[in-house]
Image (cartoon, rainbow, N blue to C red; front, side, top):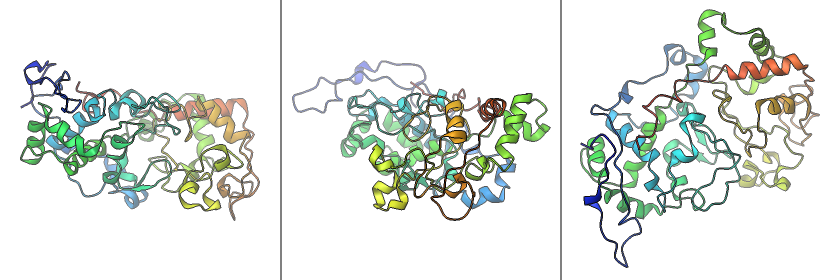
Amino acid sequence: MVACGLLLLAACRREPTSDAPSWQGAVVFAPHLPATPYPYSALNFPQSWLDDPALALFSGFGGDIEVTDAGATLGRVLFHDTRLSVDNSVSCGSCHRQSRAFADDVAGSTGVSGIPLARNTPGLFNLQYQRRLFWDMRVVGLENQVLQPIGHPDEMGMDLGALVDKLADTPYYPQLFEDAFGDAEVNLDRIMDALVQFLSCIRTYQSRYDAGLANDFADFTESELLGKDVFFNGSTRCNQCHSGLNFFSTQPTINGLENDYAAAGDGGIGDLTGNAADDGRFKTVSLRNVGLTAPYMHDGRFATLREVVDFYSDNIEPHPHLDERLSEAGMGPSGQAPYLLDLNEAEREGLVAFLHTLTDTAIVADPIFGSPF
């Protein structure tokens, strides 16, 4: 088994030769792992989620990969290991930070290239209910997504073929792969499988809002109760796009940030399809943990939740394909004049306060998801 504690594996270092891979000769630290693996296989959503008919329509999007304690343990190590990047400087967890609900606190994360990414890093949780990934929803299935950031030249920059050899040559991985899969072979399918297992275990459902569902919101402040009413009262239509227990939608939207998204630099799905009706159409993300995932929107343009609320209240731009729920009529064809909520100060502050009740403090502190290094 991999030793617990931080170990300098000096005995496993090799002197690099002129034709040796760049990772040989690097100092290698083993991960801290518990003697008995964390019980990942026992994790699940609460019964209220499992019984919810709307969520049942979207469950199972994580594919048919079975979660095992050893497999998710390997996935946790892979997720937080900087050795998955070409220069050993960036891990998946470098940009998807546990303290930020596995998002980042900058508009564009910076990987091995040193060039900030054009799109904001989204949070990673409740992936069971997400079939299409990335802001432009270009990938179907988590199993088809997890290796892409590793190979992306601006993110982790690692040649995927070389990654297999690199991990096989890392002292602590052969035993981890053997524990997870029955033998020590390292291959891309197994790397993908383990990462999917770990990521599918990151589930968030323990917020003050969830407690409020059980006690009729007895612990909410006056401002939070006002904000809850604003969110759900129907006239604001907040819960038409961010609906249900997961506060999300599987449908991408054009939300009126720009008159012409492509001209502004990012046409979203429209850049993939070439269809004008998709100009600026982006994924609708869950509002769970939204108090931790600033900055906001696909490009991180808004630093605070108050800025987001003010935008939807007053500043939605006209667009030929603006989502009808953001238009004056609220139904019918897209592209109608924007709907101005014109919220008062108490309603704006209340809405911000309510959104903070969606924060799950458990997942940001639970060592089961944290870095083992």
